[in-house]
View (cartoon, rainbow, N blue to C red):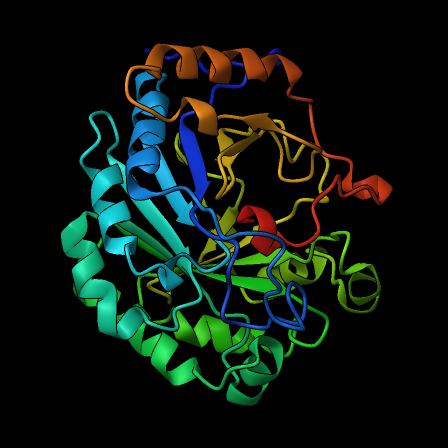
Length: 325
């Protein structure tokens, strides 16, 4: 049943589910001082996640992405993956991770049902990676990506925030990275949040920098698939992988939105840069599935046409770890 349609005709088949606000990295653009507790860590448990996933699947969602914070700081992340994978109607279980534990655990997560993986690597220069993330773990993270590729997963992608310091000097390194690896590296324009206004002003780089570089180097846009997200990906005959751009400041970015977000405490967010949300947690119990579905469907009446990032408005989003990006 496909009931998740908003007032602009957009259909939602993709759930981004944050399972924690905790992150063990200190990325300069998100949590430069590290994670600070904002209240009791009463994050959704495995059973609540199961009820939630089932409700969205009954409404037409077929893809679930587990995010954070850093989802793999949860000791029960394997159980969470399995719970999502065992839900009727869910055929894609994805996770976005900083990769700190990837090389050691990817085999277990894949066996539990993980089909799609996104790994955050903001620079392939060891010193820059350390400076941006606060951790000297680049080699281990890349090893984890290669192990994931060796497992034959349906999709392995790399996310890199586009920053002034890495925008052009590091692009060649990422191209070399995908020369033999069938990986899509997607550069994400730095987004302004309530906590990073000064950093944004100093470090934001327009996606046009990447577009210009790709054109000079002979990369061409790839035809979009029906289930593709917001990234525009580019291909080159000499490379096994792809390079792409997620440009949230571009006109029309929200026109093809196909995803809904639920926070680690059970709040349905209609937009990453919106305000407030719809509390679902009280309904995440046995026997309240129909009521839960009706609340989700009714909430779409309030979904706006797009965010207001271009106007300098970030909603009530303090940082991306808060909502899972």
